[in-house]
Length: 327
Image 1 (tube, rainbow, N blue to C red):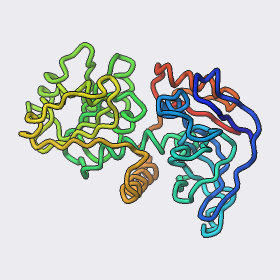
Image 2 (tube, helix red, strand yellow; image 1 turned 180 degrees about the vertical axis):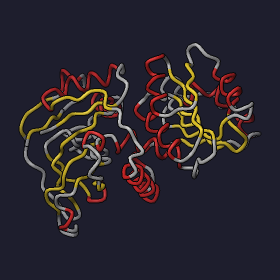
Image 3 (spheres, one colour; image 1 turned 135 degrees about the vertical axis):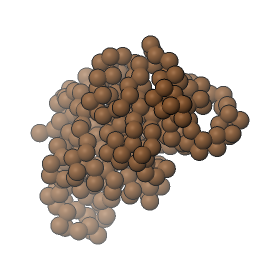
Image 4 (cartoon, helix red, strand yellow; image 1 turned 120 degrees about the vertical axis):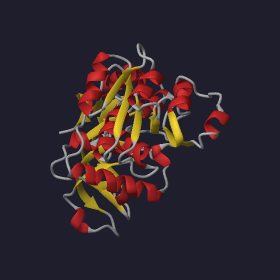
């Protein structure tokens, strides 16, 4: 099969290789998926660059997210699944061979049935961006009739989080860093878009909520936004944080948050418990079947352009998801 791989960590130009390698073998309990689209996420390029530590395997085919069709199944898997359209999760998490190849063999539960009306490109965004958004919005229960703040509303996760919260009946506030990103957040359905570089976020939130604040924050930058979050989170509110790059080790305003009985939820989507994963899958399946999501594909590449795809994600200038399409 055609694939992209690396055998040492480093820059995309230096270490990514494109060529032919052996097709994967299907073991008991696994499915063989013909990949149609591979999702390229920031975590994928950071792992290749060495930000996640040393090389875990002698050869790595990158990318955890993808979508395609099941072409074969191992013992213990229903043969009726052959031909099924699926999206994949954790394709490269703790595994040597991810989705940046024509085929992948992985546990059957990591291949999720995908509605016929969902494009493969969209399916390649379900494993990390959409799943992270779903858990951030719903891990504390329904947000119907509540107010949710989504920070970074034009980002891959934020864009899905806005849509999912609106789908459930919430009022949604979001923060962005510029007009173009603001437009993307508005198109996703945000009720209030705040440019955090030019506007006073606390004042804008308080004006919008009549001083009551927000019930839940889906947070991309926990440390950097903590001074704002502690002022606008409601009593018994939840801050669900999946990132904190700018301020990696923030000083926690414990008593300010304690006297609001605020819940701080930090999570990594790769390692959520199995019962939580099933809820995420069920919820996203329902959202897809109801056409509740608009998928923001910013750039598509061919497999031979994987180096450029990685460099594009690293640059961080696109609004939306980056994918690699395989024919």
